[in-house]
Every structure is written in C-alpha cells, then in structure tokens.
Image (tube, rainbow, N blue to C red; front, top):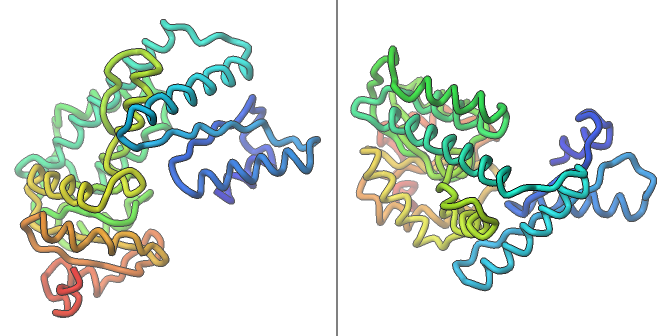
Length: 300
C-alpha cells in the first residue's frame, strides 16, 4: 500500500479520474484514510479523488441493505467522475462477462485437482494472479484455451493443500513442488477464494449479496466455518497433506490450525514465521516428509 501511495503521489499511473478503495482489509482502509487526510490538509495536491466502498459481510438482511446503499453511492461517484451514466445494459454485460471469467477459472482449477493433476499448483496460482490485471476479454480467451487441458502433461507427487497466509507470487509453491509434491488447492484469498461465486442477476442487490457472502476468508467467517470449508476442499481435491504456511508477523493462521487439523482427516503440518514470499528449506522438507518434531505436530 505504501508503494501504491507513492505511485499515486508521483502520478506514475497517469491521469486518473479517481481511485476506488475497498474495505477488504486493514491495509486498504489505511490507504483510503491517508489519501483522505492528504486531501484535507493539502487541498491543492495532485492526488486524485478517492472513494471507499465499505462492503460488510455479516449474513444479515441489514448488512445487505447497507451494502446496496454503498454500491449505489459508488455508482453515483463513478458517474460523476466519468460524466457517463451507468446503464442497466452495461451492468448486465459486465455481470455476464465476469461470470464467464469465473466459470473459466473453475474449469482451470479442475485441471489441477484431477487424478493425476494436469496443472501444477504454481501454474494455477500464476493464472489466478492474472485476475484483474488483463483486459477481461483477453483473460476469458486465455481461460477458454486452457480449459481443455490439451497438451498438458500429467503431474505426479504427494497432493498438498495449502492454508494460512496469502501468496501473491508462486515462489513458495515452486519450492513445495520442487520437492516432488503437487499443490492441488488452497484456501487463502489469493487462490480459488479470489474467484468466488457468480452474480445471480444483473442488479445492485445481487452484487451486494454476492460480495457479502463471497467465501470464508478470515475477516468474513469464524474459525469453525473456515475449518469446515478447508475440510470440504481437502476432500474435493484428494489432498494427502494439509500444509499451514504463516509468514512473519502473521499470527492469525495459528488460530485456525487446531480446528482445521481436527476436521480434515489428513496429516497436518505447520510452517510458522516464514519470510515474505519464501520458505525455510529444512522446515519445508520436514513438513512434507512427516519428520516435524513431535511438539510441532502437537501444536497442529
């Protein structure tokens, strides 16, 4: 977020009508508050205007009403910034296109969890990481071409399911698969959870409902709900090992592990205090081979 703010202040993204920030995590909210404060104390700044979309996730009718109000506000802001009205036809076309993208992603990850896998975990994560970075039409074409699996080799190795900290690069997956394993699934929000459910119809109400209910991420679900989701995903992927990877200063995954280990029905291994985007090779070897110290297995 600091890098994004520096880029905005230096105008490295070119002329912008505005910046929309979601309330998906604490870092995003901090970016919004800093930008808002800069506008307050330095009204002549070249920083573009900023708008926060505060979508909540409690499964209540009141939350849905709140989210619809926030989306209506967003629509009004976007129309003001662009000088264009958002039509029902445009909304319907966008919903259709993004639902097609999600279907393409589901077909892609099915290749990873087939028996044997036709796609490695690092390859799948790389394709998942393209979401939101390619023009939508190009991305749907890419996913359509990939869906058949033609020419993809079969993968062999212990089937591993990754939980814990998010991964925004393939580096850790590469280290896991370099040791003969295959990552067949994950429950962090840069993986399959990033795809989520379809929008059922082209209305703001359906959008609000989808983003209220989309996926048991840590800030949207209890530990028990996340453990149930992880257990179902482990069964669906046929994973033989649940690997919990937690970065330095990310203590939250440790709270999930006991509930997950009790629910999944396969061996659970833990990696804690790992460097950002990296993993300790010796600890990873122990986790994959089942040679972790007894007290570490007990903590799991």
